[in-house]
Image (cartoon, rainbow, N blue to C red; front, side, top):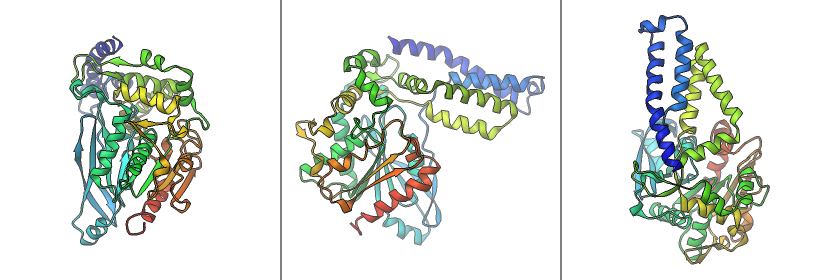
Length: 417
């Protein structure tokens, strides 16, 4: 019922948001007579704020059309390499007409970026992808909003997520790919590669795990504490709802994006209030650059997706309540997850000093679990001054973290492995 109430609210706010947007434009357009009225700028700022608070935020685009690689600006085309009901495997194909860069790109390492299925769209890793494209052939998991998946496709459990990662690795070619997992997927990625190794399959050339809850008992954060202080029944009764009839996935149980977004805001409400107030003041002052920066950030931050209920509840139980991975008790489809079975993949773990999502030591714990990987093929990096998002996005990612990731991948690529 809560999801339906949200849809009624959205249908009410939609026309109001469109009206506010149109009014703001009429009051700011230089060719409009209304823009000359006294107080027009203040009214326009108020209308735009109303528009931004009431609008529906669609999934953003990656918008990566070109990058500088091997000394040249080259075109990038986003392609769908593999399409499954709950996830698309996207490839960012680079094209160049410079003979020297063409030859160099042929030998660039292949990277699969596994994005989180945890509220925001995979476009949150846009900066990660853009940096990687300078030196790599890049794929990424692009998770589908669960409300858009018809119930005829069945449920989507944590086991299905793991099977999906295995499928993508095989599709690209395990002997050729380096896997980078960011935050939540570090756990299922480690499980997927462990299972592949235990079966005797080829495994990726390297695994880079960034800010993930491999061992949530190490320096638990607020996220960890919430999961351990409430029983699984509390999550099922309070955050799981049914998709209403106006979506293809109607009848599917999900953790709705709007509830996840409310949780994000509740973690630091004063920060968001001040940000919107500053946006209003920027509009009054005519500070268009800062206003545009606000729009860009919240266009991404406010765009959320519904998570399949089965996957969310499995993750809460398996990862954050029972700690099955670090305890060595995790079975996936009847197979025991044994990270010690991984022998040939190199392992890099990265943590942020100030990460308030995955505490210090939670990702580094992968080294103890992956005891079959020789010490010379493993490395751990603690990024000073970095929060959770700083290890994969922004200036610190580009200037500090990415060069270390790039060099590690090069070190264990096919020619050097």
